Image 1 (cartoon, rainbow, N blue to C red):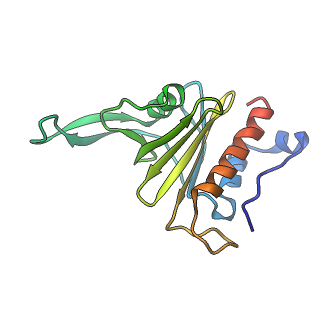
Image 2 (cartoon, rainbow, N blue to C red):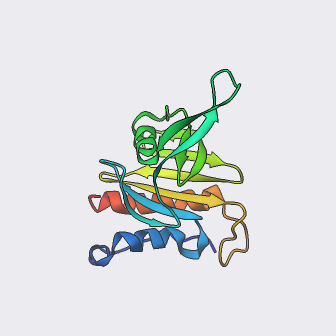
Image 3 (cartoon, rainbow, N blue to C red):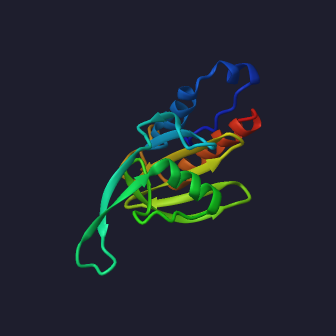
Length: 169
């Protein structure tokens, strides 16, 4: 069976916490990780197998003869990619300690699609939040027996973003 897009009444939505929403994204193991961030400052509101941090990484020097340390601010990365469709950090686009490649941005829907080795992610901006869902082909979807995939991950992530947007978030 396909992952279900969450449909809730207004009364049900009022009773749900942010953690309930991320748990929905992880239901049936359709996503590998799920998060909801503030679109104002990028702070993590709720996460399931997901976090955003600041840290340093070593990257090759411009002459490729050594390495240098650069600061990573994952919240700033998310905010920049949602606003500009790109990440200018010298360390590249990093979220959840993982380096991602930006595959496509859709400014009309506020959606960004990311790729990593054997997986990918979807970021969707709502009025006040940014919803994150990722998939890994090494994880199986419960009840389907098939690996996680971008179609199922995007469907539940975009579906939750629509619910939040419609509720004013």
